[in-house]
Image (tube, rainbow, N blue to C red; front, side, top):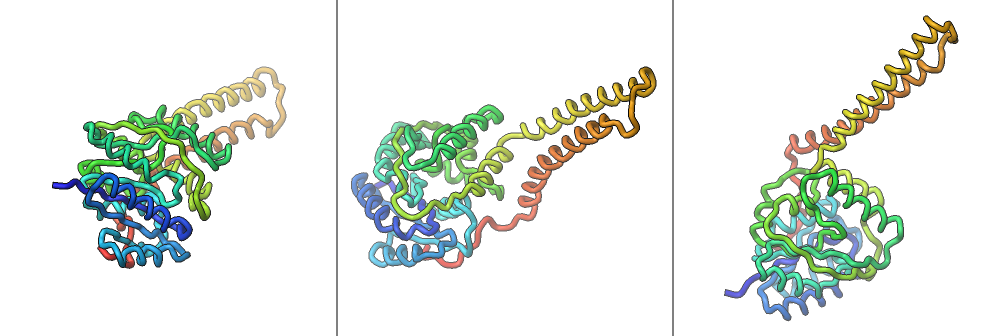
Length: 308
């Protein structure tokens, strides 16, 4: 029986890219000679991206679309596509054409060697500024050091995963998704294929600094309790320093008599203690916020329209 491939394409204002990525994906599946389905997940686009996808569906029953009720974010849109996928192998790829669809051929052929996960590892990244390059590089290397799982560096969500990995992901229902971390946590046999990442073909990226920061926070808090240890350690350190300052203040008042009422050491102590309290509360608050979101058990997404 011929194997099947599902391709998940989250879209957010990608009208200038949809027709081209679709054409290139069709060439890929024809080369591989597989049964296939393309699942376009419209994550609240305000341009005509959805209309273009619907046009593609008219002449090809293998093209599926899911229109979410609003913008839920990239990770949730991908999760939605995974939930409705049916292929033996599933590929996640963005619509901006920075990740070449033709690499799917190498990903698929590599998976046939016995790998359940084959991710695309970037050798070079074209069209991205120095700030984004250096922060991404630092983030993944820091994340590796503070977690006990091996999250691949220099890679995004562009990868091929086996059906058993998809089924495992479906059981991981936490609200704050960090898919590349979840896939690494699941395990199985994983490897990579290297490639050079291209510039965005058209349109503007939907990944603002705010969204990247939120993704980074989700990645850290989902797979590491190191920030909580930092809060605890900071509490001990600053409390010790404050205690030393207080001893010195008492020494100055009782022994040397060299003091001034309202001496600055009191302010220093207050600032030390206040600083560590605010830091600790902020870190704990991030974790409590995630607990709250998961306890509510709200659906990860809502679908407005679909042809599935």
